Image (cartoon, rainbow, N blue to C red; front, top):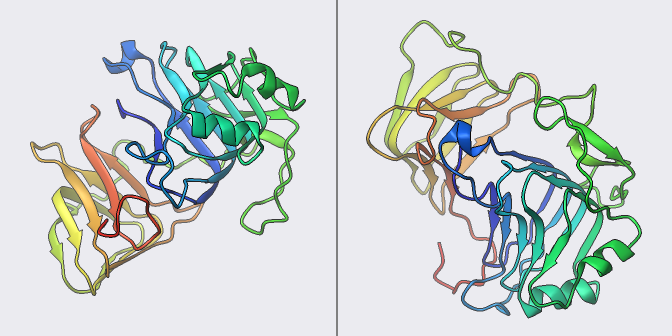
Amino acid sequence: DCSDDSFDWTEGWNGKGQYLIAYQANAEELGYDCDCLMECDNNGSNFGATPVAHPILANVTLVGNGGSKQGVRLRAGTQVELYNAIIKGKGQPLTVETTETENALKDGTSKLEYVTISGTLDSKENIYTNEQFVATGNNTTNTNPILNNYYVGTVNGGKDLSADSFFSQTDFQGAVEEGNDWTAGWTKQSGSAAETEPEVLQGDVTADKTLAEGQTYYLTGEYTVKAGATLTIEPGVTIIAKHDDVVDYILVEQGAKINAEGTADAPIVMTSEKKEAGAWDGLHICGYAHTNNGTGSS
């Protein structure tokens, strides 16, 4: 229920990811029109800033809300390697912008392979075009794969990235195979929480804190893990942002730690009582990763 972008990177991000899902409900259901499925920048103020954003992503399913807005928007100098992806449900499913971003695609620094989109690629600078996207021989345009339960289903054919130990081997496009819905059970049914009133999370965490396995917690306002403290979240924990008039979020400061390890059978669930956008402000981790937004970034 996010009215902004489902995924968003900037400031030189160079991470990796596999099995990523975004699903946007339609505007009639939500009351607003969602923005991009994935908005991808290097640096909005300096397209050539270093380190240059260059994430590697595989097995991605992105389903838009049927509106005319953009799906995946590559711009502001970003580079990317995107493999085994399905992008559908947006009027402009895949857009490339800015000279730096399009040149990286044209010269092979960036790669789009085994990507299926429901329309065509839109090039703002006309450097990397839809014709070049299709010419790879493994990308597909104007194709709308049938998905069940919102995002379950794949397209045959994919790039094997398992030479990199981060990635598991696949031979399909998309994140969730039929018969192997690893997302099943990742939210709780109404009334399934403990009968006792859950503990409320609020304020500063100055000493090590553990959220116990299988328990439910309410979050109200800012919950900040201060430098020197560790927040441990055990499998099966549910954190519910309260229906209140403050912005609820978890912040892990530089010098603090978070140790959250859910499992497929006991995932860690973070959700909100309110359903409108902005009710839950998310988990913010302030680390020491490389950034191209200045040495004082935090």
